[in-house]
Length: 563
Ligand code: PEP
Ligand code: MG
Image 1 (cartoon, helix red, strand yellow):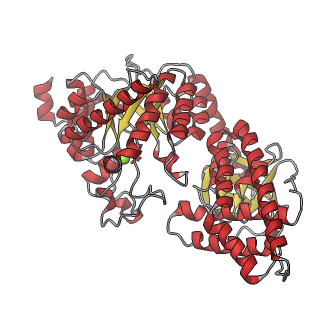
Image 2 (image 1 turned 120 degrees about the horizontal axis):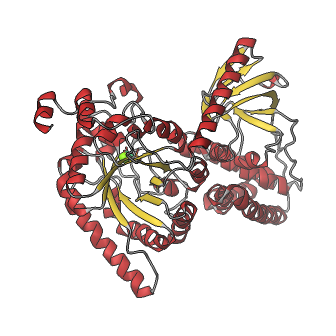
């Protein structure tokens, strides 16, 4: 037996046979052409064909996989209109008097190699898109038809890499899992396979070779492992794990429609964190009570430019409609540090985590902020919207935000555009400053949502990006826990509610403590909803003070006075 470890993209245990998909190498010879105008028109014709094919794919896949994912075909179209890319193709044809397919092949390799050297994983992942679109173009130049991907039943599709258009072409009835040597968790192909719910492992490395064709294998999509010729013990373990996961799913079904209520009868709001519409399927499947955190910045990261008002309006409206009146908390743009769209001017900052990021960028670029607020308010009539502002450190910032909101609403009034007057406004509590001023902040907003990921890094001074610091990153640090308690007390003092949407919300070791502090809402990734809901139903909150003392959040001598 051989065990190869990669990166888990989509969970699931799959038994099957390896089918090595080796994309037909397009060996393209360079030929000298005498009629350059004819060659350029051959290329132009192929480009038009590729564009209309992408339009068809886009329309078809909107139905199948949703607009967010189908957008990849629009990105491919944009590539075909990109001056750098197409300009280079034409330049090669003219300067080297060569055939169009060779020029496309060559230009695509150049662009892909540039992107491949980027330090940004997201940009590196775009090399697959360049190659995908160039293959389409070459196919049209060569007048060839697209061959479908055909597989036997129970195939484990293995490949060096897989492209988005190949992923959507996969026949789910036959292909039960996807494994690739390369690839990143954030590539569009990974995003697509996740939304199609095909167990997927990427970055398995060079051990995944074509010679494995036909081998029996098991994919553990949860752990990101591929077992080749699994022994009996591994098969037994995998069957057990599959059954265990199946049992958890069954449990989830039983929890569906039931309240998240503790043994003593306290009802808790359990919501989901999402990054885009593609996550909605899992939110609905897991029966979340609402969206507690919609990280809107992913909409910005998936585009080549700031998403316009229409695209944002459509996205927020769909999220609200799909939640059918349940609360949807959309966080305004929180870019910076690791979340940097390449179209945003690159400002050199020595310490980006404490630099121009998040709400500060919105203040610097009111045009971007206003566009998002307009889209949010326009969408607000389609459900129960709340807006969450990140990285707030001062009540003055909220006053400034409210001023901008008022302008936006007046503008909408003047245009006769309807919006809801019940949009709740909240802030992330993710800096020590916000905790220390939580009384003043609570007066200005409707709710708090604690971002424990950032609160932790700013409180215990540990860079959350640096994996070398993992051992110093102690999420249960007493300073962080006491800060959450302090923010909860402030919120309640002013009759406001408070949630936790950072990773700590899904840490079931802390559920009892967080609820004893009075946290009203917990928002976690859809995959964690089940365990959290089960945990909530197993605890009692009859002795909240006792729980706080046991965890050290309240000192015993303080408790004496509080009883
Ligand atoms: C947080 O900081 O805890 C949070 C939820 O936001 P993000 O992880 O997106 O910074
Ligand atoms: Mg944060």
